[in-house]
Image 1 (cartoon, rainbow, N blue to C red):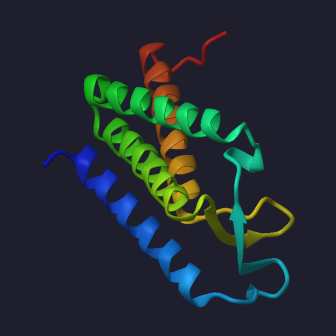
Image 2 (spheres, rainbow, N blue to C red):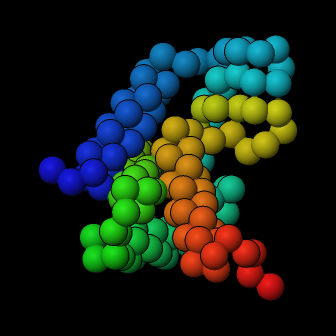
Length: 150
């Protein structure tokens, strides 16, 4: 099994398992570091940062984006970092889609400061994008013999 599918499976499974756990157990905010960091269940009907599109448009848009990323990953991921990055993105997105399919909402539960409340799947997507961007910058830097592009 390729690294892409291993990371996809792990990010999907862990994200969905924690969402199910939160849905069945968390009833009130649980402080981790006072009022700054905590676990607080919210149901998000929107997509990224609570943006809402008309219901059917939202699901179709997310599904098309996920399929495009999955196809791109399978066709182009050559390095371990690319496989990991794409695996995190697709696994996190699939977990959020599955969570939404169960009750119409994505369960968010990680609260840090005044930032939007998010979940593990969102974190997987963010870390995956960061891994792809970081590798791209590093590859460009190496391609330019260690000189930053102008």
